[in-house]
Image (cartoon, rainbow, N blue to C red; front, top):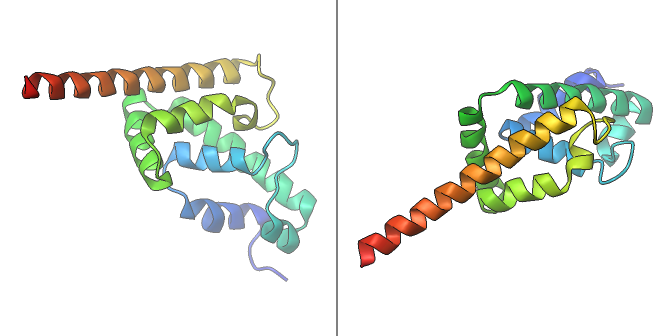
Length: 145
């Protein structure tokens, strides 16, 4: 018998270990990988597949809403943190997220308003990263000339 509900367990244990909103969103998407349901053997075993899946959809919906409500500047900082913790560049991280759009949204269609909004946010973050990288390269070139 568990002392926590599946929803509490997902929020307080599983997602608490993942930093950043974008990190959490990418993690949730990784548990789907093109499937309708989420795959996490430990949580499904403890709480049952249906209960776990309901909890994951709820949390996933909440995280997407948090990302869509967050200011772009906050997401830019979040991207730096999330990518650093994953060991890849911010640019690669956001491009990977853009490539896995179908898993980033819990059950939403690709043509939904939330999908369009999330795609716009990720595109903006990608553009900001590209601009930042070009500026850094330009500054380095000028300082060595």
